[in-house]
Length: 471
Image (cartoon, rainbow, N blue to C red; front, side, top):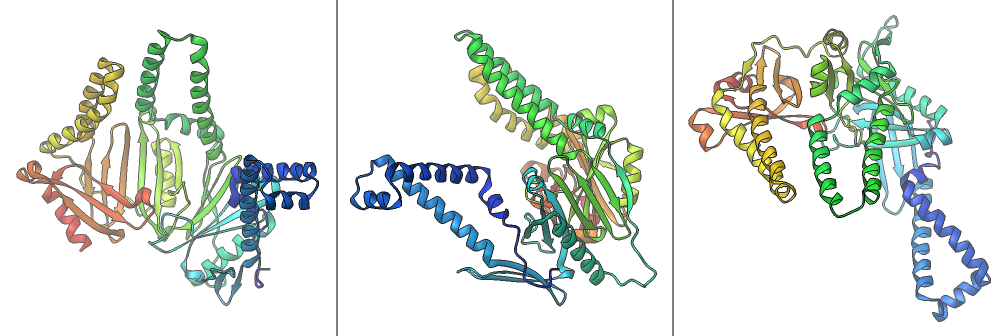
C-alpha cells in the first residue's frame, strides 16, 4: 500500500492551521463573499482598490484576506508536494516545494511509532502517526508526523512496527512475540490518579492568595462584581481536572518480549510503543496526597521518545506498592537497586535551607503589599520545606544501578544504569567545600523533562564509586 508515493490526508491542512486559523480563515471568506455581493462582484472590488476609494477598514480587511488566502494556498501546495513511501528497507519522506527536503530513514533508526487520535481526527475519521528516531538532537520533539485515514494509519503503524522488529531482531520461524496485558486501569483509578496527583500545597497557597485578594476587593466592590471572576477561576480549574481525567481514562499497559505498548484517552486516544532496550531511566513518583493513601506511580525515560508536550512515557498510574512492583517486574525488571541507602549529609542542611529561604523571600516580597502576615508565613514555610526536603534526599548504588530520592511535596526516586549515564558534574560552593560535601547533576539521553537530574548534598566519597563506574 505504501510502496508508491502517498500523501497525508488533506485534513492535515486544518490541523496545521489550528482552531484559531480555521476560524479566522472561515470568517475572512464569509465576509469576503458578502463584500463581493454588496460591491457588485470581483471587478468592482478590484476597481475600488485600484482607485483607492475603499474606506481604510475595507483596505485593512482585504489585506488580511489576502494574507489568509496566500497562507491557505501555501499549505495546500505543501500538502500536495509532500509525499512519503517505503522503499528497500527505508522510510522515504520528500517535500518538493521551493525549499526541497528529503529524508531516508532506515527502519533500524526508528525508536517509537505512536498512534494518536484527537477529537477533530475522530470526527473526520483520521489518525495521526508520530515517529521518533534514535537522535539526541531531536529527543525533545516528534521527528515525523503523518495524518491518514484510520484504516491506513493502523496499516502504516503495523507495517513500520513489523519492519522495525525484523531488522532489530533475528527470529526463527517458531519464535513469535505474544503481547501480554500488564495492567488495565479502571476509570475509577484514572480519576483517583488525577485527584491525588494535584499539588496540594500550591493549590492551598493559591487559594489563600485569592481569598485575601477577594477580601480586600470586597471592601470597595459589590460581591456581584467579584463572583464572575471567582466562578471563572473555579470552572477553569475543574475543566483542567476533567481534561486530565479524560486523557488517562482507559489507561492500559501491554508488553511482549521486546516492547512495551501503552494506550489511553477518551477524547484524544493515544497509542505508543517503545523497545525495552531504549529505556534508560525509571522514576517512581509519590505526590503528597498519594503518599497519604500509600500509592505510587512510575514513568520511564526513553531514548528517541519525544511526544511534544507529553515527553515522558508513563507506565503506571497511582497504585499500591505491590501492584507497582508487579508492573515494574514485567516492564522494567533491570531497574532495581539493592545497595545501601545513604541519607544526605547533615552539613548539607545549610545550603538547602539557604536556597529555600532565597526562593521564599522572592515570593514573599510581592505578598508583603497584600498582607504582611501571609508574607511571613511564606518565609517560614520555605524554611520548613528546606529542612524537610534535605532530610528526604538519599542515594544508593550497587553493581549495575545508581539511585537517588528527593522531594517532600512530590517525592521521587530515580534509577539509572551506569551505561546510560552520559555525564556527571560534581558541584559545590565556598561553604560546602569546607565540609567536603557537594551534589551531582547527571545527564542521560532523553527529552528535556528527563535529561538532567540533580541529587542532594552528600560527602564526596559517596559519588566516587559512581564516577569510577561511569568512566
